[in-house]
Amino acid sequence: EIVLTQSPATLSLSPGERATLSCRASQSLDSYLSWYQQRPGQAPRLLIYDASNRATGIPARFSGGGSGTDFTLTISSLEPEDFAIYYCQHRRSWPLTFGQGTKVEIK
Amino acid sequence: EVQLVESGGGLVKPGGSLRLSCAASGFTFSTYSINWVRQAPGKGLEWVSSISTSSTYIYYADSVRGRFTISRDDAKNSLYLQMNSLRAEDTAIYYCARTPGTYWFFDLWGRGTLVTVSS
Image (cartoon, rainbow over all chains, first blue to last red; front, side):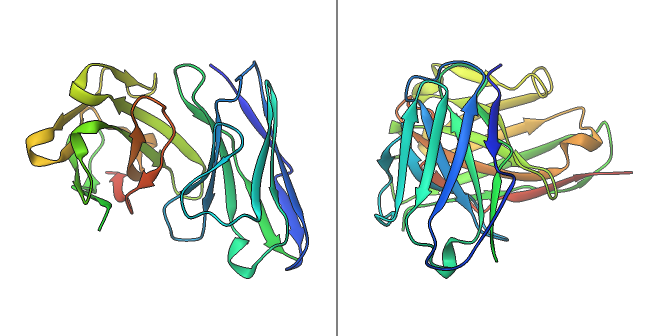
């Protein structure tokens, strides 16, 4: 089973600041990594698939990068609605797994 | 509207059974793979099971294999999860989530249905 480790666990930032979230895999994923946003009380929403492809309707301030075992999600300038929990997920092999999440909170 | 709507959750005793349903609308259900993902209260996301188009491929997490059965009915645009021998650790919100083809990421999610296993 591939283990995804997200860091930091919590990121405290102010609106307008840049957020950089990390996801590290226990083995190579090629580029088969996705990112999701989950706001309180809501279902997750796909942001990025295959490391760097924005999903339909996702604002350009969200970008993804990386390959192999190290990946990043960057939010260039935080909007109030971006304060949420973010999860990474791989599709390299079975079982599919998620990281434990990074909470982006208002400082 | 493109959406997935789960139903069938509730309170069940340990060892009991429950059948979850997921109704799809607004897209051609038969051309997508569909998945179940769960989230225990206050915890992260856990993949549970996946079924490809035409039910060609079916996958389960080790934690549910042998107890849960995923199925789909394309004529009814519906996905199901039969859950048997339920345990307290199965308590979670269960989401159905759509996958384009066999790319195995989740591009559309339902709102979820809560399953509580408790005596």
